[in-house]
Length: 240
Image (cartoon, rainbow, N blue to C red; front, side, top):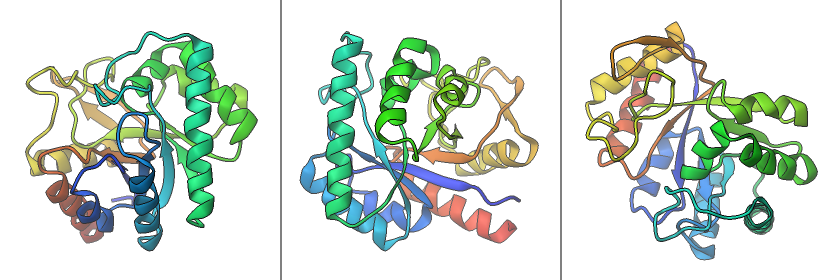
């Protein structure tokens, strides 16, 4: 088995953060627009540094009520202003904690909107090009934002999800669906093996589709997040 990066969204106020960190190689820390706050950000940055994790900023729509998981009607100019404010504040917190930022990963609805909307994608890429050109973008493989990133000179790591089921178009099954989450750990390990070694993913309908994965994400709010992270870590180490 090839080694691959394992990431998780952190700094969102979940009690499992400290339990999951030992099994990760990267993390995406909330900028505070959908969850968390400055104190949580500072604490999470320090802990991530202690575990030598690659640290990413995790900006979102300004929507704490819905945890950043709903599309918010806002102008592109307002979106740009919000995201830039979030990322500059994150950068300042990182400097104060003496940590290096490795990547940027949009959160929730923003992540999925940028994957299909050129306008939204360009807002993110413009900010990265002008202010953070050296950072890597975590994004879905073959998505709009991944393809446009080349025009902006932004490096991309294609991201796949360990604990989510996929639709035939490689979008994630909506969380409102009863089978959005993968729950069985053995199923999750087989799912990851297939993506890493065969570069394929079996969708919820049973179709096998090609997929590229430079980094694998697990969700910190998954009911079995710690067990999943530990199992993946042990599985990889046993098969390297």
